[in-house]
Image 1 (cartoon, rainbow, N blue to C red):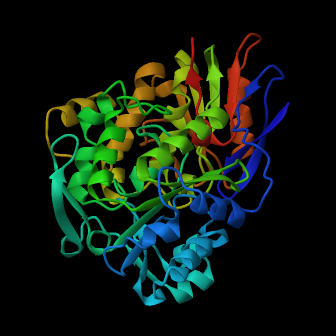
Image 2 (cartoon, helix red, strand yellow):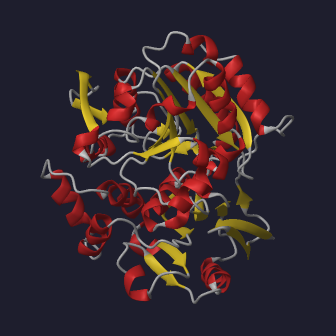
Length: 434
């Protein structure tokens, strides 16, 4: 049978055996439009006054609304104006509203990014600021410590605002359990040092640092503690279906609204699976998530619970923007022949190299199935670069990605081979229930 996998801004179609299992999110059918979904959620929030009532308690007239960067497929242009209108209706002048892009350690947005994220009308009407985790003059230390006893440095615009709103996409997340909620603040709006600690060896080496699980997850707990210290006034957590349409929204108090969204997502996007497979095929989520190889680890790690020991993972990603940051690329190339040395090195030091955490997460797969069984296919990279990414490289010619994957798959499948497919990669995360 044929199945389509997200790849770049489109899909590719491959042939798999008829007894293959295909896993996709299965959210309820839409009954109202995105604007109405958001409007209902902010008018009927969880554990909070509604947005206009909450705005009456603002400390000053400066309102910050935090949005995700271009790596998240959130259709802000379809709904953000609804929230902005509520703010202005509450008596806040447009000049006092700042849209703050929570870049974390990702690159600063371009003009085209902003248009893609927010749409031309919002870009023309509102002040938009990018967070830069290395810009010390725009970082302020706040009172309190994080869960693990660290000082907290946050974006100045957020700290100085009289009312703070965070927005985000809730989906399975291979480190923090689920994205959204508190992650808009940490890692979204914190300092470089905070991010490095947040993604340090010990936290990511913890057995509770799991996909689709918040309980005792140190990555979640550290992030939540920082977001609570930031004193967020209101949150909006959206959920997208596999067509990237808004299927639900959970607004209100930071922690409880996010928890409700996670409960919803786990029901429809985290299938409980009681078997392991010889071969798992996964996309990297398509654009914008698969724009760099840096994000590819998410799809690989997400399917780890159901691949057999020494089984095979076939991952695909367009990676139209290349490998990732300079630091990440350097790390990948440095340890391309010995990932175990990478683990020894980062375990032996308190120094955290920018973006090292993605390779650390990738090593979970390398440990279970081995480098030779971790295939990655793309038609963007040179063979030389692809061979340095701690994968078994499938370097396809431009436009020949389907042929390359099909040839590989046909060579691996035997009569009794079991196959699982995740067409949308990490947006659907299996939960092992054996």
